[in-house]
Image (cartoon, rainbow, N blue to C red; front, side, top):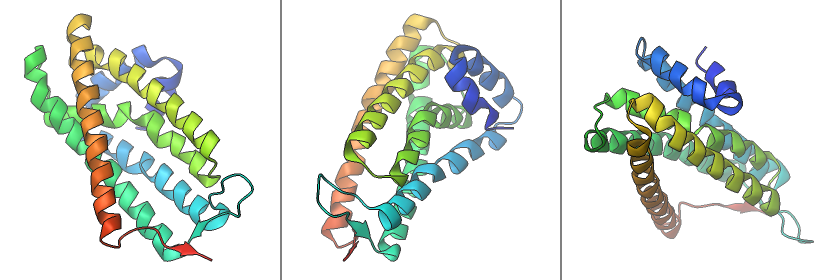
Length: 200
């Protein structure tokens, strides 16, 4: 099963990357379902948290979203994750030749999807929105995602570790640019009235 690799990426990631590389050579398209399934974790969790639990700061009452607004926000975040994975996969594919490898576009997208696994799973904290817990969990998830990226690039792309380090660093830079771009797009949407609607 495609999701079997999730456990392996946390328990023995170095060996798991090799297994992922071998298996995706046989049936690449089946592995794209990984991102479609796991991207739903933060979307569903944030919907539940925004409509049932609500966000609260200190002693203030919890702020909740209307069902329609929460559904729209969750759907947009789900689509944003999927689009981000495909964009990052395309960038990795575009940069690959510079670092001495020539993977297919689908292989690069699958790799990106698996690298993001900790970020999908940390979305579960959205069920109980708490700023300290959420921020701590996100920092840990980002750190482990970076770790998976740096050990995964050389194994999946089959390049020397020193090239893999440079390749991974380039990917991190592109990822930061993409993150800032997504924030700008979010601000634009909110500016034209497509944003959260609170229930009182």
